Length: 412
Image (tube, rainbow, N blue to C red; front, side, top):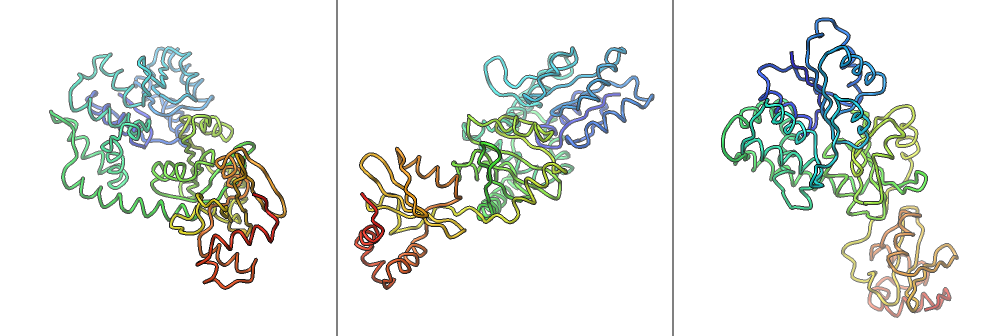
């Protein structure tokens, strides 16, 4: 009997599809970090499974089950762990563990690509064009290499899984991977994906408006409650809010928290470790439990959303030589003013100097969740400060800014 424990994402399902092709009969359990240990432990404790060959891909068991698997192997039974997450590297100390985050050429791996090489090496599979292409698409998506290469086919393969669900995706791919020739999606699937992409973009825009931020030690973290499109959402929010070290997406339905970052200096896998989670340096996760619930839900719930930079301004722009305004959803105002080669920011009767505009913006955004104020908000604010008509402010904006600086004794 061949028994495979694997993840339920595209990479884990890819392993399952390869196992189905390689072995005449295979029993597959799609798992998560939450239930993997329990399922593996229960399986190896049943005597009827003593002759089974166990494979675990794209997931790592905990310390207790790790010891049981070592005993299982020492008793002459078969087990093989194949993973690519850096948090699972300690399994390489066992003859039955193979964890390789990158190949000999330095390319990031995934569980599907490693399992494919294993099956070819052990002569359980023969390499062919269809499988080569499918495995590469899975690898590029799972490692986010598709974004750097612009390979949208990899992303769309995962999107198709999201739309169809595991069972329908499994049935379609099982048939397609048995065919010869190039791997491709059907015209109908491509049409469905085009429609879904529009929905995803609307969802991202909605969630961006709900994003809040808070500090965890030295990390400034964006947090949002979300239940769909986690990879796309985390990546998009990271790009739109580069002042944040990483994004935390809390799914209360599945009791899971996903972490995503675009910064090479941030390792979210290490961050997730403290909560019993793990994953990649730029994509990891953990579960909502008694430790994380207060931090990512209770403490976060009353926080106001981030004030994002206004995008359609005609007056309050970052190129305005007389200065520009930031604000936040707590009603605080910040005035940015170029001063020779430096920048000054005035707020709450304070003056703070920065060496560059970028440094000034990053500081205010991280400390106050502020952004470039919308034109109308600026007009309303200046009306309160200077007791002028709104029309006058809009029509004589530069002169009004100069008067505002004189009134507040802001130097230039």
